[in-house]
Length: 172
Ligand code: AMP
Image 1 (cartoon, rainbow, N blue to C red):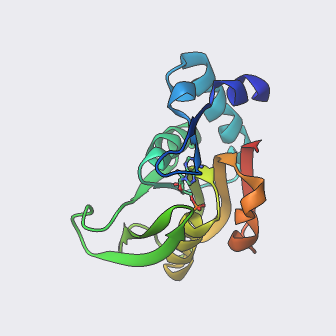
Image 2: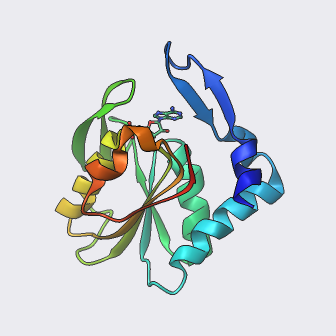
C-alpha cells in the first residue's frame, strides 16, 4: 500500500537548486486512487481524536491539509508566505533546506486549547514545521501531531520538532 505511494513520488534532481533531490508529490496527487489512499491513511490516524483544526503550510500543505481536515470534519487554517493573508497576522522566520523564509498565520485563526494537526507534504530539516509549531503553540493551540507525506530522515527534522509528535507516511 505504502509502496504504491512511494513509487508514485517523482524525484527531481537539482531542483530548486543543485544538489537537492526534490520529492515531487504532484505525481501522487494526480492519481485518484493514490490520492484517496494517502488522505485515508492520514485520516484514520486522527479520526475520533477530536481534532478541531488542521493547519496547512503553503503551498503543498494546503492540498494535504484541506483534504485531511475534510476527512476529520475539522476546520482548515492556512499558513502562508508573507503578505498573502489579508487580516492581522503573527509571523515566524525559519531556515529552509534551500534558503531562508518566513510564514504568517491570522491572529484569530486558532483559539486557546483547540486541538491542532499541522500538515505539510514533506519534512526535511524541520525549520518550516518548527516555525509553524511555535506560532500555533504561542497562540495557545494544542498540537496533537505534525503530519507529513514524506520524511527525509537523514535531515533529522523530527528532532527539531521535539517535543511534538511527528508522523510521516513515507520515509527516505
Ligand atoms: P524543512 O523546513 O527543511 O523541513 O523543509 C520543508 C519544506 O520545504 C516543505 O514545505 C517542503 O515542501 C519543502 N522541501 C524541502 N526539501 C524538499 C525536498 N527535498 N523535496 C520537496 N520539498 C522539499
